[in-house]
Amino acid sequence: MLARSLRLQQIPLALSEGSDEYNSHILQEGVDNETTPLVSTLESKSFRPADSSTDRLDSDSVAESSFNQGYYERFFSEQQKLGKGLRGSVFSCQHILDNVYLGHYAVKKVAVGNNRQWLKRMLREVKLLESLRHPNLVEYKHSWLEMHQMTMFGPKVPCLFILMEYANGGNLQEYMEPKAATLGGGNDDSSVSLKQKILNMRRKSHESKDQETSGSGSTNASAN
Image (cartoon, rainbow, N blue to C red; front, side):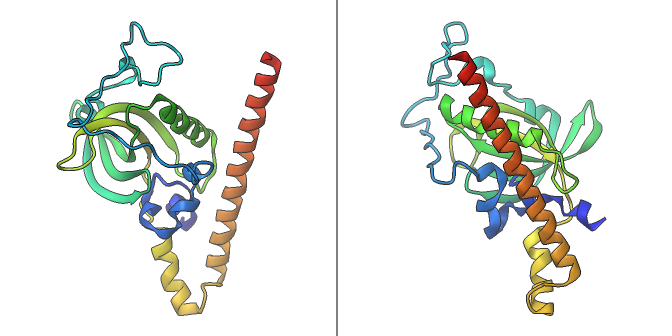
């Protein structure tokens, strides 16, 4: 079904990341006015994870025990780049175990640097994403940390890998533009239906975020 194949419109971890609509996606909400921390290069400052044996809860460094180094290379075969957003790039990949094909997925790679607070913020967004369930949203699968080389000539830096369901319906913007050009604004029934689905998903995402915020507030209040 069309609605099923175009479920990427709300999640920046799928194909729509290359579009101008990217800033309105779920994982960007709440952090648009903040700057992604710069990642130091290995030449200027070597990355050193916090020692897992002495790591404290208030440490600013990412614990070495948090990394699952080599997981992506061992169990996934990268196919192609799907898009790029402000905070990372998305690739299609095949999950393979002992030469057995287990599925086709989309993976987003986000450089987090040696910044534990920024990682925690990203993981809160991932938890929100995991809590969303909607027929028009791609499904969250799994996430992990690795030291990864994001660019051909760049250094390896701490990266968050976010594995998602792969939606092969294409880019929503590319789908809508021909209709808009042909029908003078794209206000036919299918366009209106898609816009309604997008609005419903945004409402659901805001409701989930509000519930998470109020829930954490209640917990903090009771703790005090």
